[in-house]
Structure formats: C-alpha cells, structure tokens
Amino acid sequence: MGYEELFPTNDLKGWHANAAKRFASPFVDNFHDRIDVDPIILSNAAVHCGFTIRDFYEKPELGIHTVGYISELFDLLPVTHWFFSLPWIRDLGVTLEYKDTLPPVSTGPIISEPEEVEKLEPISKEKLKGGNTDTLFHNLYGYVQQNLPHTLVPISYGFDLAGAGSELCGVENFIMWTFTEPDIAHKLQNVYVETSINGADLLSDTYGMAMLIVGSVLANNDIFSDEMVEEFSAKLMHHYVDQCFRKGAGPQIFYHLCGNHETDYKVFKKNLVWSPFNVLHIGYMGQKEFPTEILKEEFQDVTTIMGSVDTKLMIQANPKKVYDRAKETLLAGRDAKKGYILGTSCETPPYTIPGQLLALTRAARDFGTYGTW
Amino acid sequence: MEFIIDAAVKEAYEAKGIKDEDIKAVVEGAGKDRIYNGSEFIAKKEIGDMTVYARYKMEGDKATILSAYKHKMKILDIVLVGDDTEWKYCANGAVVKAGHTNLTYLGATRSGPSLVEPESGQSWFEEYLANGALATAEVLFQQKRA
Image (cartoon, rainbow over all chains, first blue to last red; front, side):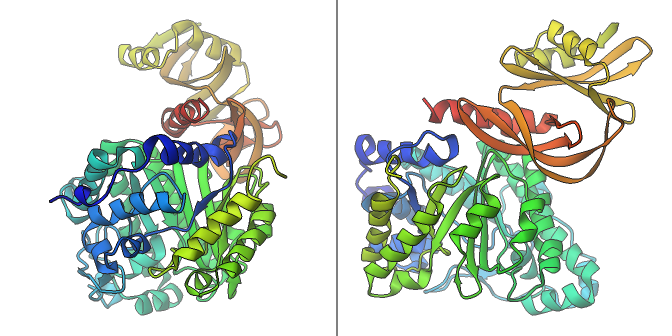
C-alpha cells in the first residue's frame, strides 16, 4: 500500500482553491480574505496524523503527505514542504542517522585538522546526480507530482550555509577556525556552498523555478559579532542565491534567520539578494521574538515579511497566549508594504498542541482580514 | 550603422518576441545612455510594453550584437545601492553599482537585483535575471492575479 492510500484527498474546490488565492496575496498585491499563517509545520503534521517524528524524516513521502493533509485542518498554506537542515552533506561524505525525536543528525565530522580542508572539493553537478540528496528530492517531488500535484512547490535549498558546512569538521572546530584560521573556515564553507549551488542547478534542470530556502542559524549574535555574521553568513547567502539564480533556480526565496539576531539583522539588508518573490523571517532578538515593528521598518521596502509567535508558546497549555501574541504581531505587521505572513519563530515544535495552531488561525481571521484596517 | 548578427543570436531573441527593428532602435537610439564593461555595451529602451536590451560591441560604425533580451516588468526607482561593478555609465562616466530596483507589473511593485547608477537614477537588469527570475515572476504575476 502506498502512503497516498492513507489519506483522503484535500478539499480541492473549497479549502485548497481559497487557500491558494490567499497564498498568492502578499506577493502580487491581490489581497484575498486574510493574512496567511505559516507555522513552518514539519514533523508536527506527522504527529497530528498518528505517526512519529522519526517517520516524518525517515519516510519523506509520508511526511510531506501529512503536511499537505493536515494544513487543511488549520487552514494553513496550500503548498507542501519537507526539509531538514543538512541537505547535500551526505554527498560530501558525512553520515546521517535517524533519531526518534530529532531530524537526521551527523554521526560525526569527517575531518578534524585544518590541513585536511585543503583536500576537500565541491561535488560537481554530474557527481551529485543520482546521489543521496538528488535521489531523495526527486523521489519526494515525484511523489507529490503524482499524488498531491495541487501542493507542489519544488524546493532547492542550502539552508544554513555556515552551520551545514561546519558539520564537515564539527561545529566547535569551525567556530574556532573562524577566529584562528579564517581562510580555512572560508574554504570549508566554499566546499559546502558550491556543492549546494550545483545541487540547485541539478534540481532546476528538472523543476525550473525551484524555490530557495536559505538561512543564517549558526551565524547569529549568540556566537558571532555583526561583522562575523556578515563575513561568514550574509555574504555567503548572497553568493548562493546569486549563483542559483544564474543557474535557473528561484525566483522564490525564503530567508530564515533563526536564533538571536539582536543586532546582526542590520547586515542582511545590504547583502542579500531580494527577488520579486521573497519572504524574510527572523526568529529572535535576544530571548524574545524578533519585533515585527523592526522587521517591517527595516525590510518592508524589499520583501514580504513573516512575524513570529514564540515556539515555546506552541507547547504551553494556554491557547490564549498564542492568540494574544499573534494579535500583537499581526497589528504591527499586517500593513507591511510588500505583504505580511503570520508565523512562529522557527519550525513549530513536533508536539505542538492543536489548540495553539487554531489560535494562530483565529487571530489571523480576527486581526488579519483585508479591508478591516 | 551596420549590424552584424549571428543566426543563433537572432534565433534566440526572436524566440523571445524581439524583432530586428527593436534591436536597431535600442542600439541606434542609445547615444550615451548605455553602460560599458571593456568593449561590451548594454543599452535598453522601452518598446511597447517591454523593456528591450541589447548587448553588443562596436567597431567603428559596426555593431556586433551579442544577445538581446527583454522584460515586461516596468523599471521604477532604485531601492538599494551596493558595491561597485566593472560597468560604467557612458552618460556621466560614473561607476555602475550592484543594487536593487523596484519594478511594477500588473499593479504590483516588487524589487529585483540590478545594476544601478544612483546619480542619474538609471537601472539595468542583467540577461540571466531577465531570462530567469523576472520571466518567471511575470508568469507568476499573470497566474496569481488572474
């Protein structure tokens, strides 16, 4: 039995048709009913459907089907996504293992000394073809094309360019080398980024306009200064998107700045590539959700923005807190020049309480309906 | 002015709906309103609902067309100015910078990465972007606003 036999079809003429119109709203100024809600639902969708976190990652086709199915329940996005933070890394020699409560994690670095970095080379497009990551995503999007075609948005991603690259040598070594051996750290990043660009090129051959997801997660103010975030992350993100565009990927981009971007957010505006269709999401300022007011003021000229409700609230037994925080961010961001989306500060936790997702959608209906402000 | 146009170049721009007379209008009408990088020029001109670009080289009165491309999104104002590029603007000799420029299409305004010259307010979009991201964006705008 295929996974598709486990799920009823989405309500295509009702829910999906309406959600699709809403989804386009912020990007084309053709406002439809209300502000969209994107809690970056991943393994929580599998949990809602009775599967496990491990099932979500170990069985990507099942995982993405749960996202497509459960999005209807909470009136979320009409498109599917499935991803984890370490694409292309297996092609470079890192082994990943599946966990019961986590996305796949590395079993350990493949190098430990700076001299070993010199021997690493990016993996060419030809060598990526048919490899771990290429096969995973072609199988995944092939499944969606066949079983959930109304939700298909192929995604080609490098994700956290600094963080994923650091898996080659271990995060501790990488952070140390950014201070003591910056050329080595750059060389290491280059290997990962050029491999990811070749991967985007490969996927764009099949899917054309593949959406790009790229972020700055390890590179944040808890670890690095603004200058180092610029040097080891923002400039790299620019290079990645610029090169992916030149090879046919995009123009949709989701920029995800996870973690604490208290002051380094200022280096991203001048460094990133802003396309006609991009969303910028910043998780935190210090310990708190990144203020939507600053997000709007700083970035509304160049991008659709996504405001945040703290993911901690999504697992507390208090839906009203979620509703109230969603209200605050909606009121602050809903009139952003190039559109606004209500989100959570990162992937909503696997054991997110259904009532909290309903609270987000309720708030979007109550305070995000176009024409009411 | 004599135009030298390779058959493959002509076939490629005709497939985009660009005509010979469009190319000639862009190049002959450019004057100093063009940018250069070494021996290569880029000039643009609004023709109907398109902005048509020609990439070309000049030798005396002979223009060798390297490629031509277009976009339907209409160029508006510069929104971000970044680092210097290798390009210079013929009209004032200024170094052209990497930047972002607003574009409007079907009632929506969005920005895209561009070449900009802040003093004159001029912007140009490169070929890879016009043929890729902007062309895709135009299709998405048409679909989503339908």
